[in-house]
Structure formats: C-alpha cells, structure tokens
Amino acid sequence: MATVARSGRTARVTTRSRRRLPRGISRFLTLSILALLFLAPIYWMASTSLKPESDTVARPVQWIPENPTLENYRDILASPTASFLRWTWNSLFTSVCFSLLTVLLGVLTAYPLARMKFPGRQVWFWTLLASMMVPGIIFLIPHYLMMIRFNWIDTYNALIWPGVPGAFGVFLMRQFLVSIPRELEEAARLDGANSLQILCYVLLPFLVAPMAALALFSFMACWNNYVWPLFVVHGEMQTLPVAITTFSSRYWTAYGKLMAGTAIASLPVLVAFLLAQPYFIKGMSLTGLKDD
Amino acid sequence: MTLSHPKRPALLRLDDRNPLVPYLYLLPHAVLFLIFIVFPIGFGIFVSLHRWNLLSDQQVFVGLDHYRSLFTPGSPEARFFWKTLLNTILFVVITVPLLIACAIGLALLLHKPIWGRGFFRTVFFLPTILAVSIMGLLWKWMFENGSGLINVILDQLPLLDTVPFLTTVGWAWVPIIVGTLWWTVGFNMVLYSAALAAVPQAYYDAAQLDGAGRWAQFRHVTWPMLTPVTIFTAVTSTIASFQLFGQSHVITAGGPLRSTQSVMMYITEEAFTNFQFSSAAAMSMVFGLALLLISVFQFRLLLRDTGRGAD
Image 1: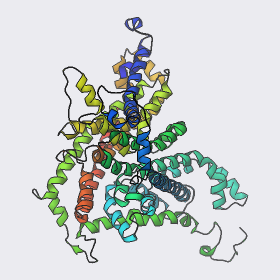
Image 2 (image 1 turned 90 degrees about the vertical axis):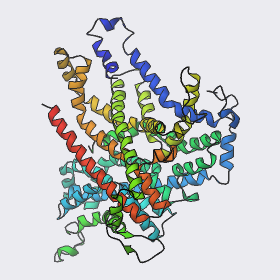
Image 3 (image 1 turned 180 degrees about the horizontal axis):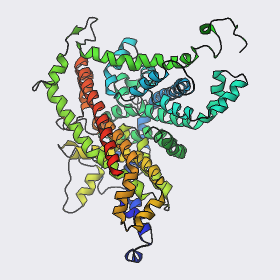
Image 4 (image 1 turned 180 degrees about the vertical axis):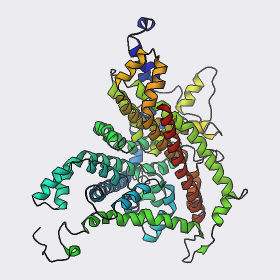
C-alpha cells in the first residue's frame, strides 16, 4: 500500500518508473477496485431486494434484477408483524432526545469546570474523566435490574436515560470552553452580564461547531446501539436496528424480503449521511482527534 | 444584579457572587451521573455477591461464590466463560492489526490528490455509519452457505470449492472479521488521513536527500509521525473488539458449537436466558477489570515504544 502511495514522488527520481503508466493510474485503479468491493454488499442488498423470491437464488447470478419488482417492499410494509414505521419512530425519538440531553448537560456541566473556580472542581473533573475508562459491560446487569425496579422495561425512558450522563460530552465541551479567551467574558461581566447570560451570548457562539458534532455523534451512537435495546425493549417498542434482526430470524430464507427490510432500515442513515457527509468527517476530526 | 441586598449572607445571594452557582450548573448532570454511573458500579458488585432472584425481595448473600466458580476448572460457568473469552481474544488478535494496517493503507492511497478522492473517501467511510445489525445481515447474506454471493463466485472459479462459512468451525470467523473490517476501517482511515496531512513535507525531502527509499521513508518518517494516532486507534480498536457482540450475534449466533460466541454474548446469555444475574454480574466485573488493565497496559507499552522511536 505504502509503495503505491509513494509512487508519485519516486517517479521523479528513478528512471525505471518513468516508463510505467502515467502517474497515479495504478493508485487510481487500486482505489477503484477497493471502492467496488466496499460497495458490493450494499449493491447486492439493493439488487436482491428488487428481485422476486425465485430469482434471488437463481443461477447464473442476476447481477442486475431481470424482473425488477417492488413486491418485497410492499409485502413487508403491509405485514402486520413488521411495524417499520413504529420502529423508525422509536429510534428517531429516542436518538433525538438522547442527543439533545447529551449536548445540554455537556455544556452546562463543562461551563463551571472550564471557566469558574470553586472547591472540588479538580476532583469532580477527574471523577468524570475516570468514569470514561469504565468498560460498558460493568453497567449492563445493574442497569437492567434498575430498569425493572423503575418499571422502565419496554419504555423510551430505558432507551434514553442510562446513557445520558456519559462524560464524553462534558469532556469535549470543556476542552473547547477552556480555549476561549477570558477577555471576552470579562468585558461582558463589566457590562453587568450574569453567568448564564455570559454562557448564552458570549460563549455559545464559539461552541456551535463542537455542539453540532457532539449532537451528530450522540445521535448516531444512540441510533446504532445494539446490546442495550436488544434486552430492555421488545416487540413494538424495539428500535429499528434491533428490530431488523428479529425480523430477519422470521424471514431468513426469504432473501428478497429480508434485504428489502434491511434496505428500509439502513435508508434513513444512508440518506442522512450522504446529505450531511462533509459534517461527518469535519465533526470526526473535531471530536475524535481532540480527545486523543 | 441589583436584587441582592448588600447585607445578605453569601449563600443566600441571588447573583453570581453566591458560591453555590458553579454547583447549580453541575447539579442536573451530577444527579444522573450518580444514579446511572456511580450507583450501578457499586450495585453491580453487590449483585455479584448475592444469588439474585427477580421474584424475591430477600436476596441470598453468597459472598465470592460466583467469582470462585469462575476460577474453578470444571464448573460450567468457568468452561464457557474462558472458552468465549479465548474466542474474543482470537478475534481481537486478528482484527486489531488488520484494522490498523488497512486504515494506514487506505489513508496512504488517498493522501495525494487524485481524481475522485472525495468519492473514495466517502465510500470507505460509508459503512461505519451503519448499525451493526445491518452490517451483520449484509455479510451474512454475502457469505450464505448455498446462495451467498461469495460462494456463488467460489463455485464458478476453477479449482475452488464452496465453503459453508456460517456453519464450519474456523471458517465462521471469516464473515465476522471481514464484516468488522469493512464496517470500521473507514473510521480509523479518517484519523490517519488527518495525521498524514500534518506530517511536514520537509521530513520527506530530507529523507530523500539521505537516499531513503519508499520503505525507509515510511519506516523512519511516516510511521513515527503517526504514532499518536496509532496509540489512539490501537487502544480504541482493542477495547471495541473485546466488546464483540453484534457481529457474532447476527452473523453466526455464536455458532457453530459456540466457536464464535464472544464473552459479551455469554454474559448476556447467563443473565437474560439463564436468569443468573449474579453470576453474569461477577463475569462482567472480571471481564471489565481485565479490559481496564489491558487498556492501561497497552497505553503504557505504546508510549514506551514512542520514546524509543524518537531516539
């Protein structure tokens, strides 16, 4: 891999490589083949979902559906046991709540930790930081038993609250708050602003990008969560990614319907990603790299 | 501002001079933090020391029995816990180096401007946004024993035979590992791309003057410059891979013969299928502690290597 990437540079130096294909062609071909391999499973899903059942296992393989049909989609959307709309709503609602709460609590908690002096500040900050090191598995059983005691099994509460106090958001917001120059705040204070006004009018404008990134990634984390929803919510209350596996165990040999279901379940995320694609990668370098 | 009476004691002030103000901001998060993070840690230990029965109000205290049986050869918990832990370790040992090597490879391929670079980057990053269940179903269908695309292609190639991937001990790891690689490598790639962009061109020019070839440049310039990202990705990928669950759960359901069952899957089986919550809590503690030690150890190891690389 390294060889290919460097070929552009070394072409200038060695005479041997000058006789080769134009610069970058081999690299472009490698990338194209890799891209095809990466897209293959998604293409194969789409293609299978558009075939009548008998064609899904036909030989020779139909790369392009010969008898394209939407009957798989029609069947599963009409099926009384598959409530795709409800599952999508469950995922959407809980992920939005989770993401808003994470951002709100992240900012509120990071604010005094970053910009105020008070006894216990360091202790609390290090406690939050240490909590990020605790592996998630530690919480699974106690959280589940707590949900039973709270009567929260099969409720949105169970999907939203246990994850909200995770300290990553606090940590991220604190890092950005710390870097804002103090003079701005002092100027506002001289003008008579209180701490909440300073937060809202002076500091928040600096936090828009990291807040958006945090919201995006919290949303994705909640939407894609698997282990927890698998055990605390059932049937109608399931989230889309978990429901698709129970759906699949009923339809496993009906590949056309199965892939239509998979396509429906992945569509919201794929569309959202393609629309917001630049923000994803920008957000990643904002959040992912900042915390290493 | 004008509300506070000058003679009011500090704690009753209604403005920012009240020393309780910072704590008010911390309060909402702190309450949830205590309920859902601090309390469960203690509660988990408490549960692991009892024989937890959902139908009873009185829980029987059994001390360290559940921990003892985990370390007693021959008990079923010990057998399956260590077997599934070994399965998980196998997965980690194969997956993490692949995730790092492939991510560096992709990042290097995309480092220099090339026609369609944005498109390629999007394509490689795309799978990371999918839920693990979607990824699992896609690759389960790709590797289906009879009619999966991979076997159809193997069937048509001369000299190669179809492989019942999903039901053969050993081969069953292939769909899980390939799927995981496809699913997560794009994330690491973006981290490496950012790090590569930050390597000063002057270093390569200097290396070239010294007569360094492509490999020497990679070994002595690129690789050392990437060390911080490598530490980060190694630690995060290892921790994530140890928590293997969804891939095995969806693609092979842990089979055949528990050969791809991960330790997380076994813990959930013990809790939610066998209703042995205390035993499962004890396993969570042992496994969680091991994870913690691994991340600390790995961090220190890689830091030491950084020190040596810089000489």
